[in-house]
Length: 111
Length: 113
Image (cartoon, rainbow over all chains, first blue to last red; front, top):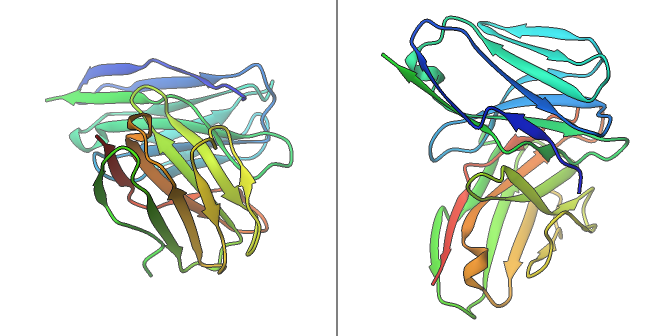
């Protein structure tokens, strides 16, 4: 199947620092989504991107749909303890409704 | 509004046993999906449905069957469980038109011993 390469796999940062993670693929995506998963919970949608070059913010989160349509990044500014969790990128290819997920970035915020 | 509800939340099976996982959504969504989540591998699509009475295979369908007899329900069956099916299973749904954003249930943790 299609693959999304998500990096980094894990991050340890100090509270207050900014964070950046990204996903890349050899395939062209029509949609990029970023999800967060807390322990024992299902993924929750953070940001959805639908156009190449689109830059969207949701509070301290900012995500961009790459110009080539093969990548996306998520930035978190001024991290806080509740940012801890696993962040997943997901993309949609062609007309298919199903999403392809990256392997996730485990974020730990140190006090 | 409950969104997507999965039952059960936890289950332990012996190898060879069968079981059915239930997913129910109250958002009138057309599309429903079953994913499995394993450490370091993200979410992989098992089967999905584009509407009542329809099902299709995803990335890792072997060993699973599904049914969508009612629009709001999507069932995932394991006919003969294997230890390789130990995983966390997530159901999701998305609407017919517009955005492809999927909404997830809380997951079912299945252990096959």
